[in-house]
Length: 126
Picture 1: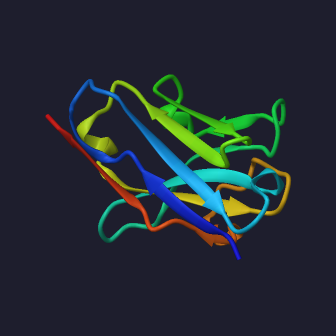
Picture 2: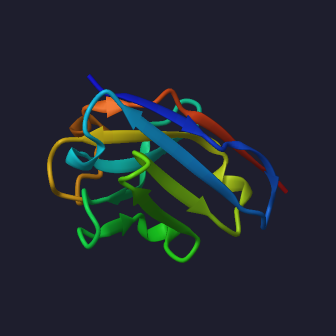
């Protein structure tokens, strides 16, 4: 079993930035493709970004977020990051990190992921 713990959420004004972190324990981090999803009340979890297992494996950002959000990972630190810039009120959500054992970064549906963190709240004020 893997445990995922997110941190870095909070309240920020529109135009500001946040960096979310997700640290993985219990399984070898480098065996996981990692992703971030966002969820607002009453809605499904929406794909935000994913990143492959190792350097050069590529990443994928949701089209609507390209240019503002980036995903990265540090396999030595067992941590994946989501850098969120120029935040907008509509980015307000609980953000979850997720892990899966496959290689593809194209998996944008939540049910394809094996492990989840507890979520971290991001609130963007106007």
